[in-house]
Length: 321
Image (cartoon, rainbow, N blue to C red; front, side):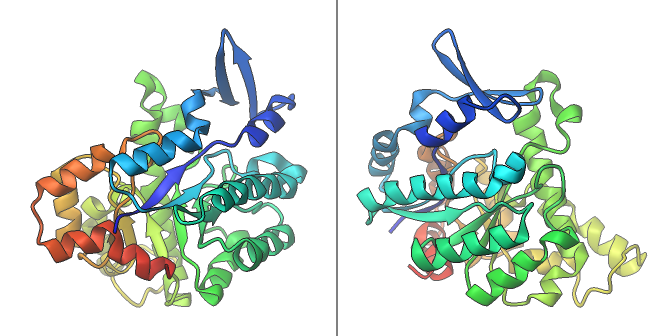
């Protein structure tokens, strides 16, 4: 069985809502092309990004049985006082897609984190009424890192509910530094993963919530490659505001990482660094075709049992499928 743990869909109802907005984030159409605008970050939204049948076709072509489906940013946190209504619109749209294809899709929710009460209520609705299987948590929430004190209730609640939190890069905090040569997605998104995960480790949240199920995408950004320095800075030089129970690298080895990085050498390093029990297949479709991730993984010629865990076995356990 193959389970795709990171796959996204824009919903027509949500784009229509953003077309009516007069301030960012907003959507507009020009010369037959749909654009999503967030400040000076402008992205095209082709019809393919809204096409459920195209997603199912990509799944079928690559032998993917189940997809953990979520919206794409902007999340509800960017919509101010309208955030709760935006979250409900997103989740009702997502639930409608799942209801039409109940054997193929499972849902991940995004929450209006600027309003703790509304976010908590929407989380309970998504998990207990809509049957969603996890939380997609953006690395920054409208320019505030996801580990900041006002958001920490979510880690406790996710641990209590037993639902995974999947980190995902949002509009990068480093956009200004990475937008040259259109490197925002190449570098900015990976730095988002790196910084957010490092902050979660350094904050002590994983000591406070040892049963939390946490996923970092894209092979952990750059953190697995530089966490030896983090170990030294925190455990030897004592440059930390927290007293951690373990080395940072040990926390990183204990979480899950998805393998969205189409380079076999990177996947191989992640497997050596972490373990076959902590890697998850994801495609990041529609931006990445599943084949671009599956082919590098299969080129490693891993033992069949190891490959089966990465492709679906670990996800079945993580999400309780």
